[in-house]
Length: 216
Image 1 (cartoon, rainbow, N blue to C red):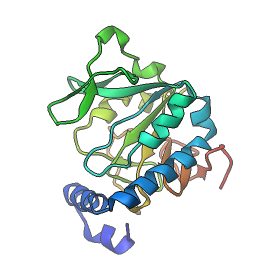
Image 2: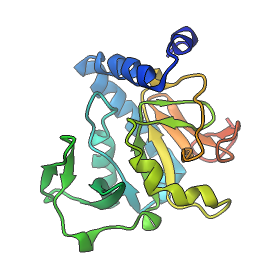
Image 3: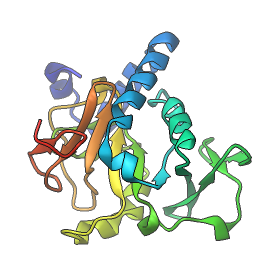
Image 4: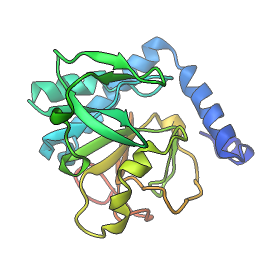
């Protein structure tokens, strides 16, 4: 997203509306190509390769599609989970070829699985989180429901041991120069797009590393 455009979009509501418009305008062929590019980038990320329990999502509203990546992860016998709305927070229930999916109140597909199959958020190794916009300090603008921030609020009080790692998933066009942080916002550990994976060296900090943990 251009700096000029970002500066002209002053409210979070207007920013959401504009970036959602931009990503919905991507053509089907381009969308598929970018999803495969993202999968290649993430498969080169050591943190993903070392993770066994991974939270994913099913794309909607023009979001980056994780389907090519999830196929590769299944081939590696990774355990995949999808977010499910439970009150003000998210549960993560298993996703496999036999999983029955049902729509939630927002029309988003969720696993229809017993509560006993839930994976507690602290037991996940990695979560691939959708977003509307991100900046170079690891700040994430979501759809406004606050579900991810409430679910992972405990990470704000942990300086060292942080589980799961949160990787925002986006197109390059969703990057903006800066987002105003709010005290309840849970920053991302990294952002992955079709052009690379950027890890932030400190929570909400200015530094970054590549997918293998090295300075870029």
